[in-house]
Length: 637
Image 1 (cartoon, rainbow, N blue to C red):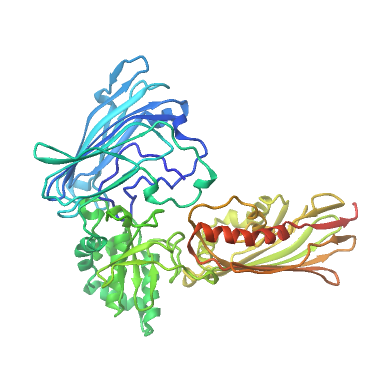
Image 2: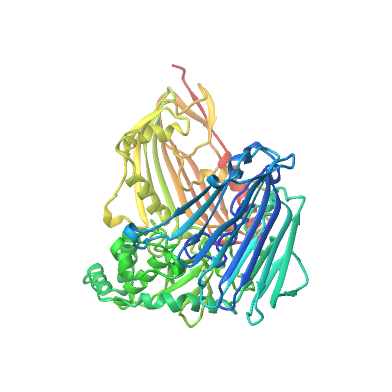
């Protein structure tokens, strides 16, 4: 729900592939309001914007500590700036004691950390200078205050300025203020929500706009707050010189797209990767997989490098780069192989709406697009198969850089692209023990994620995997793990299978008679049995990220002499608009065969509140069926 308000202001122009300027108020949930710990007595941000887009930001804050748990965070503050294009300085810092004494921070309590290369060389990944201050003698009831300034030496986008500032409704603000001063020729757009705007005025030839915010009674968490919040629901200010989102895409593309022209080195590399493969889509996949597997993540925080990709030679020399570098190199490789590709700007957080005022931080991540096949790809997100995107990507608005049509929305993904199949064979002894095996096959992004997990297991963990995994379900067990095909050739395949054999001492745990709810012996990424806990949820009032899938579970259970199942759950078939479910419980000559199938037809993307509530209505009878237990009897030892 509410994100914790950042102590210091982040960079006004946004950084592609790093954090958004918006202090995302929907990023973290907390049932305990923040006002119990800290009160913001003062929060002032003053921007002075020059006609060329350079800005000077002066920030002043005073936070009172009300609870001992907040002391550690309150005792220090730090902020960073790009040394090559900015200058930062702390103007004052102090501790205001509860009895009124003001203690200025001594010179020894300041620290400067600088990123430099060796022997005067420029650094590769960050030229940020970090200024920190430690407040002296802070106790509960005291207030810590700081004032600092960050001034641009050159604008991040020539001639442009963009900033977003939001406040958390879960925090007490006694005196928050944002002031923007600018020269008359500068065409600034302003959009605010839930802030008090002061009358516009002039000061020394500059236009002055100001907004204030007070929040003496912070919002307390409620179940209705679950879900994705719209930006305009928050106290928020957006300021921008960009006339449109198309202009943001152009400002990025003007400097990024020339770097995506294939060099001789890129062309040679592309040929070595695709070999004699002639199918264009296969060539596109091979190049995507090479970038995803071989270029690791490394930020670009050197001046305008925050929004401009590195040269492809630099990325290849270091086998490292951020999202812009991944996207630019991949586009260059595609071009070298005769494949059309585009770069796409998207929000990396939980923002699903582009506000009327075009601001850079709403599109702070770069991915790729294959227009001939309408496929979006994110080579920065590791372990994602070709044709898939990371969770939370579908349904978001995007900007296509250099394309005829800039604005678009990533369509939802088909639910049947995510699948899980589980086959369990089980022999239950009269003493309540069980032996058997389980085979799990996955399709979709979970396949690569599980393969990666299995690949990275240490030898000792592999040996103890079954025991440790089943102990999490309360079983005393041992067994052998089969990790499946972990070959490099399958690293980004969207299909993966693994399994294990097991011996469980205490499968039937309630004595000589009892009942249990049938479920796989191990927790899995998806589970039919897991739907037993999805019934009777509170009504949904907001949009949610959602996904569909096809999953099935089968159990072939053999009962040893001396143990019997006295009662089985009833079979059920449901065919709804959103869900299809079938469960079958049949006795066999020596035991029971159970088959349960569930097809959640929800597209992978964003679901409205109405959709979620209608979906929930179909879940409830399925959940009740899955809660039904198997009743057993067995002989005592």
